[in-house]
Length: 125
Ligand code: SF4
Image (cartoon, rainbow, N blue to C red):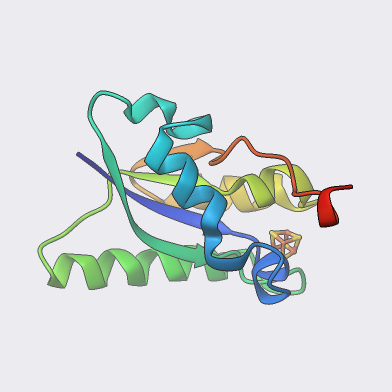
């Protein structure tokens, strides 16, 4: 069973444009998108971190990741991989910087993407 951390877009989450992170959880449950690789082994989400914001320092996500790993270590837990959210992969102009920062410090595999779903249409339109 792989243990995962996700990095998500602060702007999208704080504007409640992805309520409950439901698409990531649904995709993990169904093993779709970038979670398909866990079809046989299984995987669980152990934490979701935000990017640090458009005006933030990209190192904030690195600090969040270090803190998450520290907290999990105190619980005798770990993460095996970090997924960069589809929200970031599709919509963030700073994604290359963010991904580079995470990859340089994660110490585990970094996967680019999470769920495969398009944004929902409003009222069925
Ligand atoms: S930097 Fe990118 S991922 Fe972070 S809030 Fe801004 S658009 Fe979203």
